[in-house]
Length: 456
Ligand SMILES: [Zn+2]
Image (cartoon, rainbow, N blue to C red):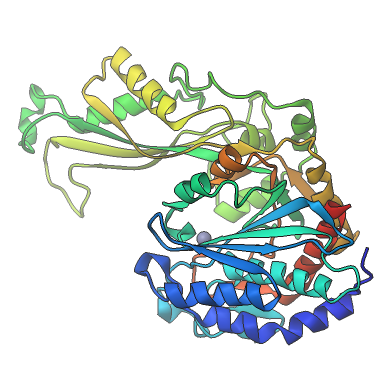
């Protein structure tokens, strides 16, 4: 194993800082298709300048996917390949007047680096390249093969990624994957997610007439808003149990290891209440499941919004002809979006709400790595080494959010874990996005130690 010191790595990273600043200066806003070709070239050059090979894949539509490859050194383990997933695109910088610095001019103030893309996701790509650069300067070189998949449509839903993964599954073949994001939570714990929840995004519509009607007709005419709200109310009771038949059917039960991990996760009720200004008890109160179990192991059903009739200032009597609700269900491993949509429609039909129609607008399956895979402990062990005894490391079977991990699993079949340099003040997608330089340097050490462990 190499004998890289933190000081040596920091000074190398500092020397390479202009490369990071120039990368952040590219306004790669994918929803506006801005600066895509020059960013692709820039990413390629960053990889090639360290001696890596690249391929730009653009034959299947959408923004190009960049493939990168670094071969293990002669003393390294060429039988092991680690895949890094990153994206070169960013969210729009708007609203511009809320930025305290120029979003596309990286600016460091008091140890915090501000620019669009620092946290999401250009910083993590540079961290990983810096780790490779540091290892390449040692006598031992790279302990394993490294592949990169750097896409340009993550911020617009990774629309074409599945096609590329399917066609180029052999090219991206690897033994394990480090996901694009990760970092520290609001209590400075380093969180390693080993999976992610899925999503069934539903739209429910009720139509009860051809036109909006004078509400005096409410004496004899039914009302789309009542139909929809009563239909929604039938789907979940006041105790917050989801009543849709079949909703929970396909859930893969958590393993012993997963249950133990979740039982050990901290949950701070006071800070959660304070953070959101909650005025109601948690819906897990009085239930057998803990908040941590609910966040990791249980699906959700959330009304995101309801639209019908008149909701302006003052009064307007009207009997609305139509009503619409958006409902998202965060799914856990085993559940499929199409089956969930089907169960909801069947439930409505069975309970006399045939007039309420369900449309699946967006669907993603959940993914959870096999927690007994040796890679899981390699990521944890290397994090303990990089972040030191002062930092608590949390291993979480899956994040409560959603992302396209399952397609990596589908075509590459590998464990996927998160590591990154985000922090609770990162403001990804918002004005004044940032990372802390201390996290940046620690993140590089984490990747150096991980490659060492992985290549053993
Ligand atoms: Zn993002």
